[in-house]
Length: 208
Image 1 (cartoon, one colour):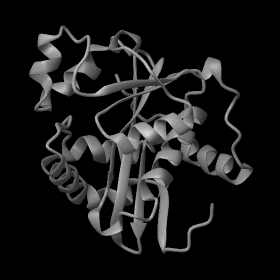
Image 2 (cartoon, one colour; image 1 turned 120 degrees about the vertical axis):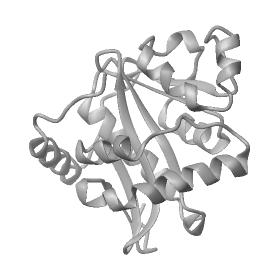
Image 3 (tube, rainbow, N blue to C red; image 1 turned 30 degrees about the horizontal axis):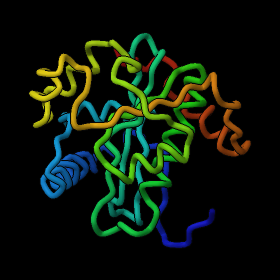
Image 4 (tube, helix red, strand yellow; image 1 turned 90 degrees about the vertical axis):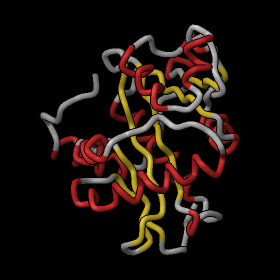
């Protein structure tokens, strides 16, 4: 679908680090409004994601409109597209869907055999996940990588997760298994863009 609203969604790079503090504040503000928890991330964490071509940003000119990033877990057997946020000034322009589509496509191209999962309390994210082929699953179906679960410690709902022995929490677990789907069909111009990104960061550090 073509959008003529002046908002461009792109794979982030080091030049976008200037938006990180705005991104973090937008995420924190949204969590307060919803009354839900978030896995807290630092400025450097998101900056590294940008440098490693594991983040997608939406801009309207030089104004921040939205963001999400990718993480790999369990020796890259699992992937998450995380931290999806849209600035309040740009809601109603399908920005979240455009970002979600790009991070999902980027994840499938870079890690074609990985299972992509989501842990979310947002109805809009669940709807987008369902449209992409995710299925609701139990927490036992997700990665057992301790580094992932440690990220939940910054969430206000972490006591619930801990008390339930990590079997369930406020969030809903959803999983996309590539073995149950045809390979992603990606336009050639998008493939060329992703190849160029991988060439630019051939020795970039990987997630634990």
